[in-house]
Amino acid sequence: MSTAQQPDPRDRPARLAVGVVGAGRVGPALAASLQLAGHRPVAVSGVSDASRRRAALLLPDVPLLPPAEVLQRADLVLLTVPDDALPGLVEGLAETGAVRPGQLIVHTSGRYGAKVLDPALRAGGLPLALHPAMTFTGSPVDVQRLAGCSFGVTAPDELRLAAEALVIEMGGEPEWIAEENRPLYHAALALGANHLVTLVAQSMELLRTAGVEAPDRMLGPLLGAALDNALRSGDGALTGPVARGDAGTVAAHVAELREHAPQTVAGYLAMARATADRALAHGLLKPELAEDLLGVLADEAHGTPGNPGAPGTHGTEGDAG
Image (cartoon, rainbow, N blue to C red; front, side):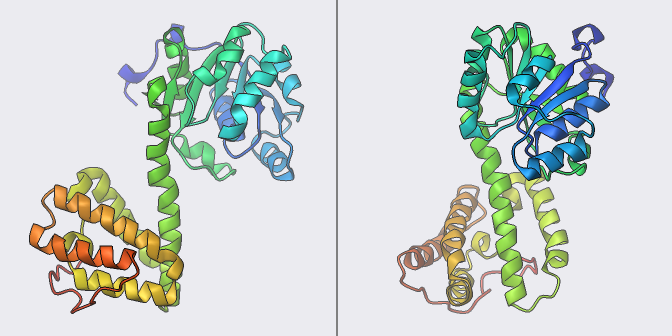
């Protein structure tokens, strides 16, 4: 990271006592990262056996305490609970007097901005929304992955420097997200990351059914290249039978999926239609080929199988798509 990106040392928060409410996959990893930056984890709350194991693994010797006691000990509190539980947790902590004036109250939800912390703000807390754009495993590798990870940051203007400094101390890159844009921001990340896992898992299952012994080894280089191309070129990276307009190939795909994995058909058709629309809009799919392709997709979506024809007749570039 360049020197220009580092915060002025005068803007950096003092060494803080860190508490974690919700020892899921995210909280212990962030606290461990803050510990590497010189802060001091002092307490963590967790209910399930898995949460307790994660806390013991990433935050050894840090006591497990009820949420209210975590707040009593901490200058910086990480609220790392599921999205739907966050508003009630914040209200409950504020109503019981657990929040102290001047205490940093941080949540890591992608969905919410800083306003969900308004009850804590009214109690004198300092609200920060710091969402790491990363998938977590609950293991020490998560701390390493925070290096260079973008964080969606939302906070009152007067706390912006403190929020950005904390992110940088965790090895992350702060990205400011306006309060009103948090739901859209989170939807974008979920669309890419969560659905990617589903697509990859389905692809591996289909390859096993097709007799491939190591589908992960086959997909690794292909999907890595596809992701790199997409990040570099956006829609210009589209390839495969849909982008080429190979209606016969697409119909043949759907026929095979209906026979061997009918649960994947709806997803294949939805993604094929979205791909066709983008390829057509960006001039990659010829309009005369798009008509046949979209017709096949419409027929298949309504349960009327299209004519598979001769697959691959519109392009033999030799790519894997």
